[in-house]
Amino acid sequence: MIESHNHELFVEPKSSAGSKVLAAFAALLITALVFGGYTLLRKRHAEDSGSLASSQSSATEAARQPPKALIIVDEALLQGGKSTIGGVVRNTSAEKLEGLLVQLELRRRKDAQLESRSIPLTPANLESQEEGRYVLELKAQDYSSARLVGLKAGPNSLPLPYATAQGQKRPLERLEPKTIIVGRPSGKGGEFLNSPENPARVP
Image (tube, rainbow, N blue to C red; front, side, top):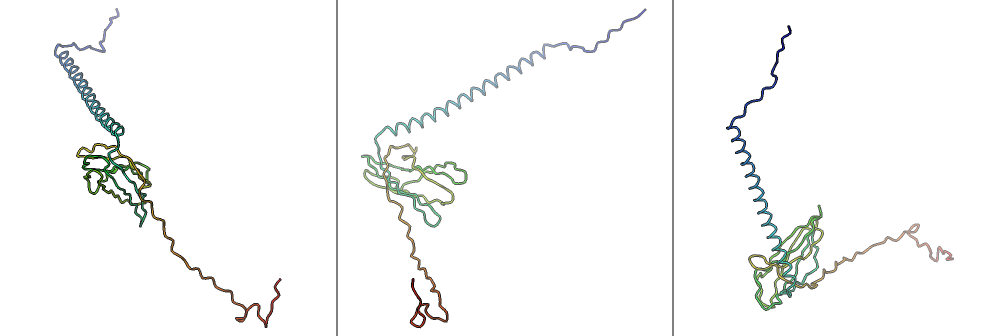
């Protein structure tokens, strides 16, 4: 008589009510965290989009308005390894403009990346038809170009509509005169090649 023996290799643990409650609570917690993070990301994205749209709208609105200032741009002056960028801003409006800043876009030589600089005017506040000047000195080896991109005013640096004009041109480089001395070839014994004592026939 052959006896059969049944061996249980895997025993399924019996589920309890406590483990089910714990799993449900963990699932709810994870869902709440995911939903909260998604809501926070949406809110931050909406704020960023709103600020970007607001700045673009301000710039567009400023471009549509009649110019309130005239920016006279001088040509860059190269001297002693430095580039001097400057010009004059004239208030062409009937109102007082305060806290004026000229915004320039610089291109670096090493990586061709753009860099923005805001240059304050001297004086920064202009009455109608008054003028102020801006100056920026840079190392010529660090930057390859500079471009005027905007005019801002007030404590919030709001963009202002403006017009541009050509200013002072770069002075011509002065070339120092050089004197070149050419030595005269000497004859035999210090005599002339063609003399009454030593005539030479000219073809």
